[in-house]
Every structure is written in structure tokens, then in C-alpha cells.
Length: 153
Image (tube, rainbow, N blue to C red; front, top):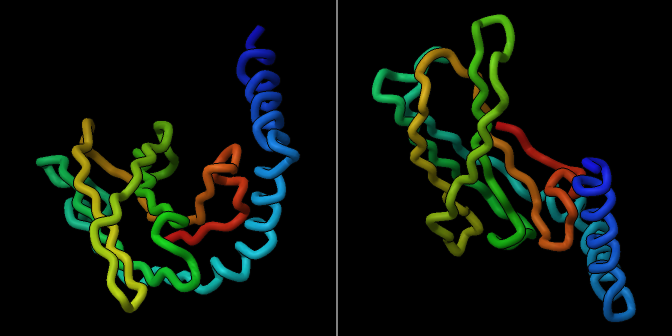
């Protein structure tokens, strides 16, 4: 049954993982979630550079290059994730599922500035809407959205 395989089993396994070892993982996740809002508020997107898209249209070679400079504030590089969200459009509405591609951390400076980069080959050129999202990550979260905070750029 699809419900059992896709929802019930993963939720049960996740619950068991959190409760192992006298709920050590659960306590750790609760502590992390209690202070992530204050810590994440110190993160700032400084610069987003995108090459390969002009006026919403992918250039003919289909290669998009993205560079993001991010001030990490009170979070470490390992606690942050940056992604390119790309959605094909007909000018009025989205016509395909979003393409979500992680950016790679490529440089860390003592000043707290992190550099994330991506070179992505689009299969189908045309009109797209895009954005960069940055959010805190923790391996104990069931889904990245469970952090409850995100910055869009």
C-alpha cells in the first residue's frame, strides 16, 4: 500500500531514530530548533551573480553559472545549504515541476563570507523563473523544510 510505504514506514523509522539511546537525537534536535531562529537571523545573502539567463530566457548554450556570497553569521558552513530553484514558464504560469539543484560551497573566509557556486546545464532552453534559497540544515531533520526558516534571493 502506497500510504504505508511512503508515509507510515518513513515516519515510524524517523521516530525510532529520534528515540534511540534514551532520546538523545530528539533532545539534540529540540535544542537545535530552539536556537536556530535567532542564529539564522544573523545569516545574510550578500551577492547573487547569475550568468546564462537574460530577461527570463536561458541563453542558447543552456549553461547557467551561479555564484552566491553569503555571510554565515552564527552558523557554520556545514549548517547552511544553498540551492538554485529553476522553473520553466510560458510567461503566465509554471509549466513544469521545479528543478532544485544544490550549490557547492567553494570558499570560506575568516570574515564569515561563504562562497557557493554552481554550473548547471539546462536540458530545455526557454523561459524560466529562478531563485536562490538558503536555509539551515541538520541531519536530524526529516525534511529540510522542517527547519521552518528560509531566505530567498
